Length: 244
Image (tube, rainbow, N blue to C red; front, side, top):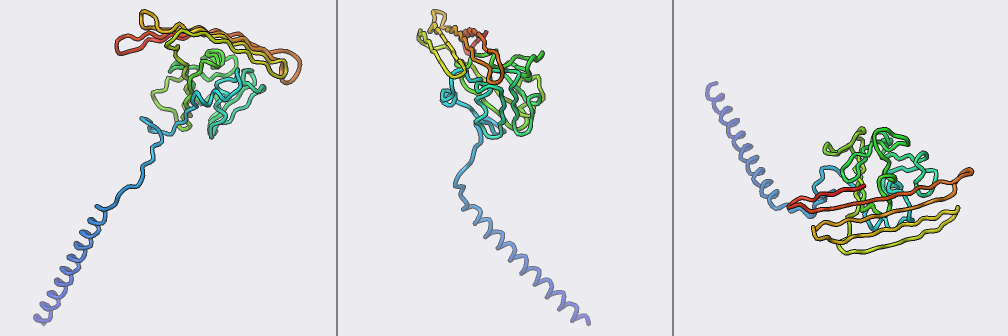
């Protein structure tokens, strides 16, 4: 009986040793196989961003009709729903925008990192983008469709953020005039003067716009007059900018 028990114990011990050595060999083989794996590609959603963002570039904006509201231009991006009572999006009372189910009161809006509020008509906590910036002075727009970043200077609930950035003055002195005519008695005049680089290394521009057109529905006329002044002054490693 004792001999039988010892033989059985020895057999079990040998079986365990053989199984362990087999597992170790398999692990070594798998490890060597993993060392030879090479990544074919890497997908990056946005530089220095931890969320997916979309940018409406200057080239995209130039394809729109003169006088088109900057917020109207966002309608071409995926997940953005825009509704307005006129083709330009200039009639503030009839404008509504939502991004992936978040309505206008749940979005964060900024212009050059300055809060614009919720941009509802007659809002008391901000300024509508079409009033703050002439359309031709919009450099680019950036939209984050997920939860807004914590560094966004917004006075609204952050269910997505829309950032507008104005253009900088030109380095060379220049002046431009543009005239647009359209249906429903639409007309728009835009003038702009760039100072070029001054002796102080700063630069500025002055721009103005006048636009009128008949209401798309009903009798009456809608229009507006705008003036923008932007001054940029480099100070050592920083830049001071002022937009009116």
